[in-house]
Amino acid sequence: MARFNEILTGRHNRFFQKLFSMKGGPPAPQLSTEVQPNFDIEDTPIELRFLKGEYIYGVSVAPPIVAAQFSLLQLRNPPTSGVIAVIEHIYVFNTSGPQQYQIQFGQPGLNDATTILSTKSRDGRSTARSALVASSGSTTAGSQIGANMAQVAVSGANITERFPNFKEGSLVLTPNDEVRIISLIAATADTYSILWRERLIEDSEKTG
Image (tube, rainbow, N blue to C red):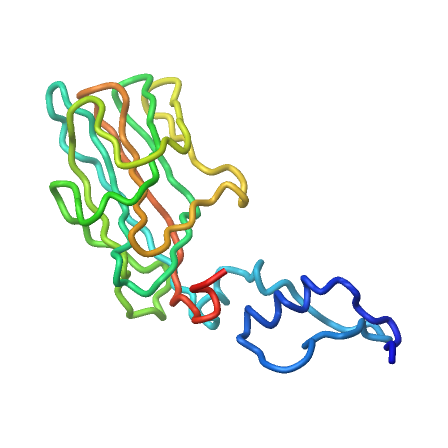
């Protein structure tokens, strides 16, 4: 028997079932007959993410200048981490002049850069360490960990640029994924910063 204001788009009910690992019939079979308060759980204010088990972190580094080499910052999600991470913002800055940066994404295995960095929680209530591994260093031309996802340019010295500039451009790091930001002009004074969030992977997310 049909319900009043019945929801006929099954993908929305399936979304709730998968999100909360629910069993049984549709969790939201019909629209409310009255006005009711609600909020978008995927657009939660940053201070409430802690309550959902989402932890926010950041790291920033200015790698040493090395002649004829290209500085870089990497963030790797280990294969056994059990977490999924979302890169919210990448910032690039240099004091040398115009510069270009390449953002690479791939699955390079266990290869980290020369220096392992300490990451920092962006919420003082969180005492958990990030499951991701941040590292920095420099390398020779042509170094690649996977596909080129984007390229960011600064027009001159002491200018900061950010990637992505919109939410849908965020990068998702599942276990064994890595993102690398690398300069395309050698031997410049570069500073890199990454802000991200991470949470445990739910069982319902491990398969499509």
